[in-house]
Image 1 (tube, rainbow, N blue to C red):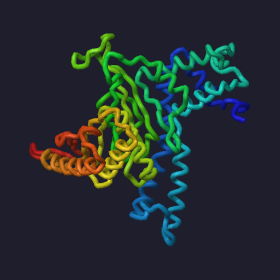
Image 2 (cartoon, one colour):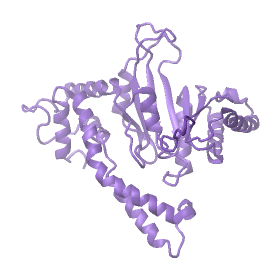
Image 3 (cartoon, rainbow, N blue to C red):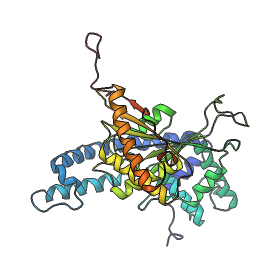
Image 4 (cartoon, rainbow, N blue to C red):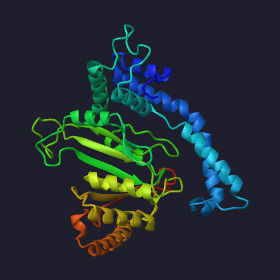
Length: 367
């Protein structure tokens, strides 16, 4: 059935964008236009979703909605979530469909691409051209989706082949240096990565990251990280879906995302609004258990905590809190029969405090 289904008009448009001769600029502009087009429809739904969650209160955290007066609120919440899901598409959806077409060699009924119809006939030459376009887009640092759907799975075999074709330095044991972020939904994880590394991850209110996104780039050469080819180090930044919130998809999903980030990253930024919570500690505990028993610890990730919206930015207070968490995780590691430092790297001073961007103000020279 899939073989006989012709591509949509939207897909034909995307193929023409790629064949325009400047796919990097055109796909970047298309990404921005899509976000601008979705914004007016998404914002009212997000506002209503927050209102419903506030009205439901603690009942929103229950596995099953209770009977009684709140049933209409649950029905409306389900409707809002379903309508939000209709806006859950981006340039990555076009790429995913094109990858499926290439992987299954679905021949379009009408020519796509150039007017002579010779561009996307899905022969070996056309497939190589699509792969080179995708590689060029990724090499320029544009975000791409790595994990999607439920259960989580890698996008396709096509994207694996593209990733393999991207050059990475072979003169360092680590190869590509991987940095990831974990944190609750709407805690500005994507904004933090964009600020630190110049990535282009989507940012807006509500859930803007589904599954796991990545951005690959090579910065200017640094004497701190010499490479054989003289270029800068290869860095892969991973932006994960929001965890530990009423809008998350459950503890199993949270554990999968957190474990994925911790087992393939050299540096994990734990972005947290407010103080370190018991939920976060439990999630790290689950990850330690999985890393030990599944023997996934090929890389020892260093965990660094970024605490946002801190009115009291005295590092001693938060360092004491982090040390207590480390002591607890050390006890867990002892029960697992291995030192904590063989699983993760966590120093008692690896905490950075960020003020609130809105509530901080200066009065007579004092913050």
